[in-house]
Length: 137
Image (tube, rainbow, N blue to C red; front, side, top):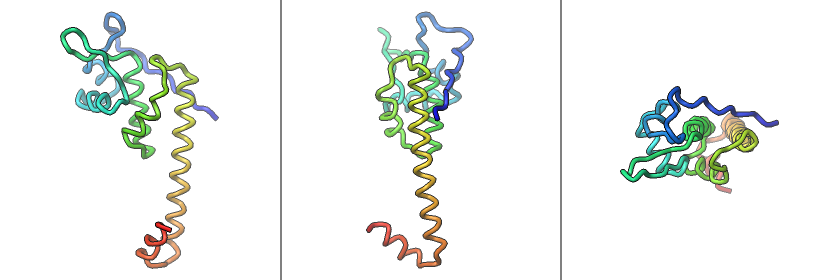
């Protein structure tokens, strides 16, 4: 079952050409400007540079960051999130976000199942070091 992920509304004053600054993206996504640069560094979002070497982002950047925060809550690393987003087009459509949602659901369900298995092992009363040693086999 796919979950549709609506795109957030663009900032009240959309910059000319639909290009957003670090500050615009930070305000729209609810993160600090340093987080915007961090997500760019790891490929979660991409920017183009102006002739003055300033970053400019497209309208999907804030949504990508918001979904990245959700994916981090599921347990994905920033590099895994960048890989998840690697095949997204520049302007993702609802179907593209549905595919991401399906992948996040599968990942979360897999992690929950693994955690439940660990919990069941811990509840056996066996020595924790023995349980840990058996995880490598």
